[in-house]
Length: 485
Image 1 (cartoon, rainbow, N blue to C red):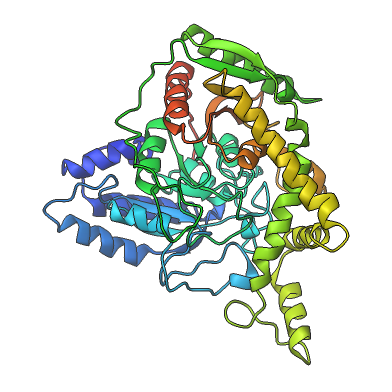
Image 2 (cartoon, rainbow, N blue to C red):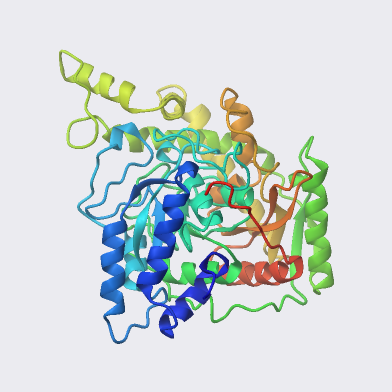
């Protein structure tokens, strides 16, 4: 019998297509894992009965050639799922049941997948540790006292613990790549507009992007192929021909030019992170790639720019949560304004309130030009730096995070320290370009460390190919003792 915990998504799809295993057997396996893994708190909502019925329905079909034939998949609870609760990890949406399906999840279901459940996340995707969720923090399966990263922490945790064969997250400033790095998995933030944002609960509209989270690079290519595509319902969606990322995946990186930005050598960076970066450079060198030192001079302004632009957009997007048409409504207040105030005060968590306040401040009269407009100008300079560099290099190699997974509660009282987790990931979001994190090693305590590849817009195939070649050379195999079962 095949050990599905050690099987890749691609392998499971092939097993189902060749009828060596049924979709129902696969679904029952992952349901059993989820029930054993309740202590991880990866799930907010489960759909076991629905998924079992979908599996039976799939097995009864004679022919189906979708990319994800008969695969049960759990998704981040930021994607609206028709008639299934979608909370965004917040009290204010605790009982929200959408009447529509997000385009990305609809694309997955069209390829033969079906919903296994909704995964925990930082409230409205605001966080780097999954500790801001109204439904409690998720545990990293790497260690019982470690955060899984955020905001897609539930997705990363469930994936690493084999509670789902693959998953999807959203990345606004690193929310796919940082948790992937913390859990020893693969996470890709695609080019802005490659995957539709329609039906995803909005955090910062000019930065949010859905992407795949998988066990390896092959699965990442498969998931990206299934979930991407033009969507006329999303005005920022890119109208381009769909690519066969998996079919075109190869390890030919000989002659490619890889940039190493000097600005990513940050102050007090742990030696383990620096050594990992050097290891990545050596692997690329030996594979025939040419290493070139580059400069991204405005990178040092990326984090402050992000923490002006993102909260500004969040304060606008979250204005809709007032307790009138949907979501939580406070019973307090003698008039409409007091009801609004009480609803938002009780419904939002501290981190969301913090960011809404920052966003409202930078958009307010007298400060708009000094903060928001200035941040947008700097954002353009950051993008220009990348554009200039990509005239001379094919991709950029950096660490994914400035550290491995930290302990639960370690940074909750220090927002600045928490925000610094995004220092290597934020620039790609501001520039709207693709970036992938792959597991590349471990620290002295055996906790995973990731390496990041960045490329120019719509060059996903290139970074997938480079990541694929690096993955084969690194040969990283994560072995967890399944202590949570």
